[in-house]
Amino acid sequence: MTNYDGNDTIYVRELGIDDIAPIYHLGEELFTSDLYPYLYRTWDEWEVIGLYNTDAEYCLVAETDGELAGFILGTIITKTSWTYGYILWLGVSPKFQRRGVADKLVDKVVSRMIEDGARFMLVDTDPTNTSALKFFNRKGFGNVRQHIFLSMNLSKHELYGRLIDYEHQKAERAGYRRSRPAIRARKPDSAANEIILNPLVKSQTNEEESPI
Ligand SMILES: CC(C)(COP(=O)(O)OP(=O)(O)OC[C@H]1O[C@@H](n2cnc3c(N)ncnc32)[C@H](O)[C@@H]1OP(=O)(O)O)[C@@H](O)C(=O)NCCC(=O)NCCS
Image 1 (cartoon, rainbow, N blue to C red):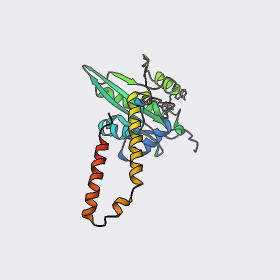
Image 2: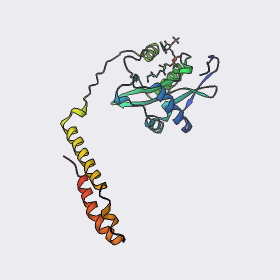
Image 3: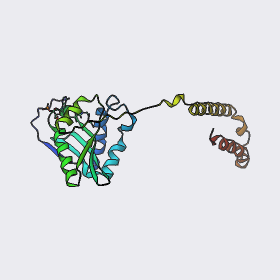
Image 4: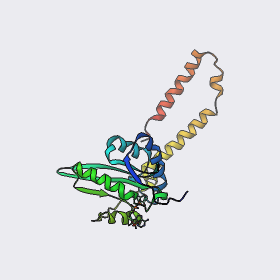
Protein backbone atom coordinates (compact mmCIF):
# COMPACT_ATOMS: atom_id res chain seq x y z
CA MET A 1 0.00 0.00 0.00
CA THR A 2 1.48 3.41 -0.97
CA ASN A 3 1.25 6.11 1.64
CA TYR A 4 -1.31 8.75 0.95
CA ASP A 5 0.04 12.23 1.72
CA GLY A 6 -3.41 13.74 2.23
CA ASN A 7 -2.95 16.61 -0.23
CA ASP A 8 -5.25 15.41 -3.01
CA THR A 9 -8.78 16.73 -3.22
CA ILE A 10 -11.58 14.42 -2.15
CA TYR A 11 -14.20 14.36 -4.88
CA VAL A 12 -17.69 13.05 -4.07
CA ARG A 13 -19.98 11.88 -6.85
CA GLU A 14 -22.89 9.51 -7.49
CA LEU A 15 -22.16 5.84 -7.83
CA GLY A 16 -21.97 4.56 -11.42
CA ILE A 17 -22.37 1.03 -12.76
CA ASP A 18 -18.58 0.56 -12.96
CA ASP A 19 -18.26 1.32 -9.23
CA ILE A 20 -20.33 -1.69 -8.16
CA ALA A 21 -17.53 -4.29 -8.15
CA PRO A 22 -14.81 -2.05 -6.57
CA ILE A 23 -17.26 -0.96 -3.83
CA TYR A 24 -18.27 -4.54 -3.17
CA HIS A 25 -14.61 -5.56 -2.80
CA LEU A 26 -13.77 -2.61 -0.55
CA GLY A 27 -16.78 -3.49 1.60
CA GLU A 28 -15.55 -7.10 1.83
CA GLU A 29 -12.32 -5.74 3.28
CA LEU A 30 -14.09 -3.45 5.76
CA PHE A 31 -17.31 -5.17 6.85
CA THR A 32 -15.81 -8.27 8.35
CA SER A 33 -17.68 -10.72 10.56
CA ASP A 34 -15.96 -9.15 13.60
CA LEU A 35 -17.64 -5.89 12.79
CA TYR A 36 -20.96 -7.41 11.76
CA PRO A 37 -21.39 -10.71 13.55
CA TYR A 38 -25.14 -10.73 12.85
CA LEU A 39 -26.78 -12.04 9.74
CA TYR A 40 -29.20 -9.13 9.65
CA ARG A 41 -26.30 -7.03 8.37
CA THR A 42 -24.62 -9.14 5.75
CA TRP A 43 -22.45 -7.47 3.18
CA ASP A 44 -22.84 -8.93 -0.27
CA GLU A 45 -23.01 -7.68 -3.85
CA TRP A 46 -26.81 -7.37 -3.61
CA GLU A 47 -26.45 -4.63 -1.01
CA VAL A 48 -24.66 -2.50 -3.61
CA ILE A 49 -26.74 -3.57 -6.62
CA GLY A 50 -30.05 -3.27 -4.75
CA LEU A 51 -29.41 0.18 -3.30
CA TYR A 52 -27.97 1.42 -6.59
CA ASN A 53 -31.26 0.35 -8.19
CA THR A 54 -33.62 1.77 -5.60
CA ASP A 55 -31.75 4.71 -4.00
CA ALA A 56 -29.14 5.89 -6.51
CA GLU A 57 -29.28 9.47 -5.21
CA TYR A 58 -28.12 8.28 -1.76
CA CYS A 59 -25.33 6.07 -3.09
CA LEU A 60 -22.16 8.12 -3.33
CA VAL A 61 -18.50 7.45 -3.85
CA ALA A 62 -15.47 9.50 -2.83
CA GLU A 63 -12.48 9.58 -5.11
CA THR A 64 -9.01 10.91 -4.60
CA ASP A 65 -6.83 11.31 -7.65
CA GLY A 66 -9.12 8.94 -9.56
CA GLU A 67 -8.88 6.23 -6.89
CA LEU A 68 -11.84 4.91 -4.90
CA ALA A 69 -11.40 6.30 -1.38
CA GLY A 70 -14.79 5.45 0.14
CA PHE A 71 -18.52 5.10 -0.33
CA ILE A 72 -21.84 5.63 1.38
CA LEU A 73 -25.10 3.76 0.71
CA GLY A 74 -28.29 5.09 2.21
CA THR A 75 -32.03 5.11 1.87
CA ILE A 76 -35.07 7.10 2.94
CA ILE A 77 -37.76 5.59 5.16
CA THR A 78 -41.16 7.22 5.41
CA LYS A 79 -43.43 6.26 8.31
CA THR A 80 -46.70 8.12 8.78
CA SER A 81 -45.67 11.78 8.88
CA TRP A 82 -41.96 11.13 9.61
CA THR A 83 -39.22 10.81 7.04
CA TYR A 84 -35.94 9.24 8.11
CA GLY A 85 -32.63 9.18 6.33
CA TYR A 86 -30.87 5.89 6.98
CA ILE A 87 -27.15 5.34 6.38
CA LEU A 88 -26.86 1.64 5.69
CA TRP A 89 -23.20 1.35 4.75
CA LEU A 90 -20.29 3.73 5.04
CA GLY A 91 -16.79 2.58 4.21
CA VAL A 92 -13.44 4.26 3.68
CA SER A 93 -10.40 2.50 2.29
CA PRO A 94 -7.79 2.06 5.06
CA LYS A 95 -5.34 3.99 2.88
CA PHE A 96 -7.58 7.09 3.02
CA GLN A 97 -8.92 6.90 6.57
CA ARG A 98 -8.62 9.88 8.96
CA ARG A 99 -8.54 12.29 6.00
CA GLY A 100 -12.11 13.51 6.17
CA VAL A 101 -13.46 11.17 3.46
CA ALA A 102 -16.36 9.83 5.56
CA ASP A 103 -17.00 13.37 6.75
CA LYS A 104 -17.57 14.55 3.16
CA LEU A 105 -19.69 11.54 2.22
CA VAL A 106 -21.98 11.92 5.22
CA ASP A 107 -22.34 15.69 4.70
CA LYS A 108 -23.35 15.18 1.09
CA VAL A 109 -25.86 12.41 1.75
CA VAL A 110 -27.39 14.26 4.72
CA SER A 111 -27.89 17.43 2.65
CA ARG A 112 -29.57 15.39 -0.09
CA MET A 113 -31.82 13.68 2.44
CA ILE A 114 -32.81 17.01 4.02
CA GLU A 115 -33.75 18.31 0.57
CA ASP A 116 -35.89 15.18 0.12
CA GLY A 117 -37.79 15.72 3.37
CA ALA A 118 -35.76 13.80 5.98
CA ARG A 119 -36.04 15.24 9.48
CA PHE A 120 -34.19 12.48 11.29
CA MET A 121 -31.06 10.46 10.56
CA LEU A 122 -30.48 6.83 11.53
CA VAL A 123 -27.37 4.68 11.50
CA ASP A 124 -26.48 1.41 13.22
CA THR A 125 -23.29 -0.47 13.91
CA ASP A 126 -21.79 -2.98 16.30
CA PRO A 127 -21.22 -1.56 19.82
CA THR A 128 -17.52 -2.49 19.57
CA ASN A 129 -16.97 -0.44 16.39
CA THR A 130 -15.38 2.46 18.27
CA SER A 131 -14.01 4.28 15.21
CA ALA A 132 -17.48 4.45 13.67
CA LEU A 133 -19.09 5.41 16.98
CA LYS A 134 -16.56 8.21 17.49
CA PHE A 135 -17.05 9.32 13.93
CA PHE A 136 -20.85 9.43 14.17
CA ASN A 137 -20.79 11.11 17.60
CA ARG A 138 -18.57 13.80 16.16
CA LYS A 139 -21.02 14.24 13.28
CA GLY A 140 -23.82 14.89 15.77
CA PHE A 141 -25.41 11.44 15.98
CA GLY A 142 -26.49 10.56 19.51
CA ASN A 143 -29.47 9.19 21.42
CA VAL A 144 -27.90 5.70 21.37
CA ARG A 145 -30.41 2.87 21.73
CA GLN A 146 -29.21 -0.67 22.30
CA HIS A 147 -31.09 -3.30 20.32
CA ILE A 148 -30.82 -6.91 21.46
CA PHE A 149 -30.60 -9.67 18.83
CA LEU A 150 -31.37 -13.19 19.97
CA SER A 151 -30.35 -16.29 18.08
CA MET A 152 -30.98 -20.04 18.11
CA ASN A 153 -28.80 -22.78 16.63
CA LEU A 154 -31.24 -24.81 14.51
CA SER A 155 -28.92 -27.81 14.30
CA LYS A 156 -30.40 -28.77 17.70
CA HIS A 157 -33.97 -28.43 16.49
CA GLU A 158 -35.97 -31.68 16.23
CA LEU A 159 -37.18 -30.89 12.72
CA TYR A 160 -33.64 -30.17 11.53
CA GLY A 161 -32.49 -33.57 12.86
CA ARG A 162 -35.23 -35.32 10.92
CA LEU A 163 -34.27 -33.46 7.76
CA ILE A 164 -30.61 -34.49 8.14
CA ASP A 165 -31.65 -38.16 8.67
CA TYR A 166 -33.77 -37.97 5.55
CA GLU A 167 -30.86 -36.48 3.53
CA HIS A 168 -28.53 -39.27 4.75
CA GLN A 169 -31.02 -41.96 3.77
CA LYS A 170 -31.49 -40.32 0.37
CA ALA A 171 -27.71 -40.19 -0.19
CA GLU A 172 -27.40 -43.85 0.81
CA ARG A 173 -30.16 -44.87 -1.60
CA ALA A 174 -28.52 -42.85 -4.41
CA GLY A 175 -25.19 -44.59 -3.67
CA TYR A 176 -26.90 -47.97 -3.84
CA ARG A 177 -28.45 -47.11 -7.20
CA ARG A 178 -25.10 -45.95 -8.64
CA SER A 179 -23.55 -49.27 -7.69
CA ARG A 180 -25.98 -51.06 -10.08
CA PRO A 181 -25.08 -49.55 -13.53
CA ALA A 182 -25.45 -52.89 -15.41
CA ILE A 183 -29.27 -52.63 -15.66
CA ARG A 184 -29.27 -49.86 -18.26
CA ALA A 185 -26.21 -51.14 -20.15
CA ARG A 186 -28.00 -54.34 -21.10
CA LYS A 187 -30.68 -52.46 -23.18
CA PRO A 188 -29.08 -50.81 -26.22
CA ASP A 189 -32.07 -49.23 -28.07
CA SER A 190 -33.69 -46.00 -26.82
CA ALA A 191 -37.24 -47.41 -26.55
CA ALA A 192 -36.01 -50.11 -24.21
CA ASN A 193 -34.06 -47.48 -22.24
CA GLU A 194 -37.23 -45.50 -21.76
CA ILE A 195 -38.94 -48.51 -20.23
CA ILE A 196 -36.07 -48.95 -17.82
CA LEU A 197 -35.76 -45.25 -17.02
CA ASN A 198 -39.42 -44.57 -16.31
CA PRO A 199 -39.61 -46.46 -13.02
CA LEU A 200 -36.36 -44.75 -12.05
CA VAL A 201 -37.84 -41.31 -12.65
CA LYS A 202 -40.93 -42.30 -10.68
CA SER A 203 -38.88 -43.41 -7.70
CA GLN A 204 -36.86 -40.17 -7.81
CA THR A 205 -40.05 -38.12 -7.84
CA ASN A 206 -41.26 -39.95 -4.76
CA GLU A 207 -38.01 -39.14 -3.00
CA GLU A 208 -38.43 -35.43 -3.65
CA GLU A 209 -41.55 -35.41 -1.49
CA SER A 210 -41.17 -33.63 1.81
CA PRO A 211 -39.72 -35.84 4.55
CA ILE A 212 -42.17 -34.36 6.99
C1 LIG B 1 -15.67 4.78 10.41
C2 LIG B 1 -15.05 5.21 9.10
C3 LIG B 1 -16.13 5.24 8.00
C4 LIG B 1 -14.46 6.62 9.27
O1 LIG B 1 -13.96 7.06 8.03
P1 LIG B 1 -12.83 8.21 7.90
O2 LIG B 1 -12.84 8.73 6.52
O3 LIG B 1 -11.56 7.68 8.42
O4 LIG B 1 -13.37 9.29 8.91
P2 LIG B 1 -12.96 10.83 8.95
O5 LIG B 1 -11.55 11.02 8.50
O6 LIG B 1 -13.98 11.64 8.25
O7 LIG B 1 -13.01 10.97 10.55
C5 LIG B 1 -13.47 12.06 11.19
C6 LIG B 1 -13.45 11.80 12.69
O8 LIG B 1 -14.06 10.54 13.05
C7 LIG B 1 -13.36 9.98 14.19
N1 LIG B 1 -12.64 8.77 13.79
C8 LIG B 1 -12.56 8.22 12.56
N2 LIG B 1 -11.82 7.11 12.59
C9 LIG B 1 -11.41 6.95 13.86
C10 LIG B 1 -10.61 5.97 14.52
N3 LIG B 1 -10.06 4.93 13.86
N4 LIG B 1 -10.39 6.11 15.84
C11 LIG B 1 -10.92 7.15 16.54
N5 LIG B 1 -11.69 8.12 15.97
C12 LIG B 1 -11.93 8.01 14.64
C13 LIG B 1 -12.39 11.04 14.64
O9 LIG B 1 -13.07 11.91 15.52
C14 LIG B 1 -12.09 11.73 13.32
O10 LIG B 1 -11.56 13.02 13.50
P3 LIG B 1 -9.96 13.23 13.68
O11 LIG B 1 -9.29 12.46 12.58
O12 LIG B 1 -9.80 14.71 13.56
O13 LIG B 1 -9.64 12.69 15.03
C15 LIG B 1 -13.89 4.27 8.67
O14 LIG B 1 -13.04 4.08 9.78
C16 LIG B 1 -14.34 2.92 8.14
O15 LIG B 1 -14.56 2.74 6.94
N6 LIG B 1 -14.50 1.93 9.04
C17 LIG B 1 -14.88 0.58 8.66
C18 LIG B 1 -16.33 0.48 8.21
C19 LIG B 1 -17.30 1.02 9.24
O16 LIG B 1 -17.18 0.77 10.42
N7 LIG B 1 -18.32 1.77 8.76
C20 LIG B 1 -19.27 2.45 9.61
C21 LIG B 1 -20.51 1.68 9.85
S1 LIG B 1 -21.46 1.34 8.39
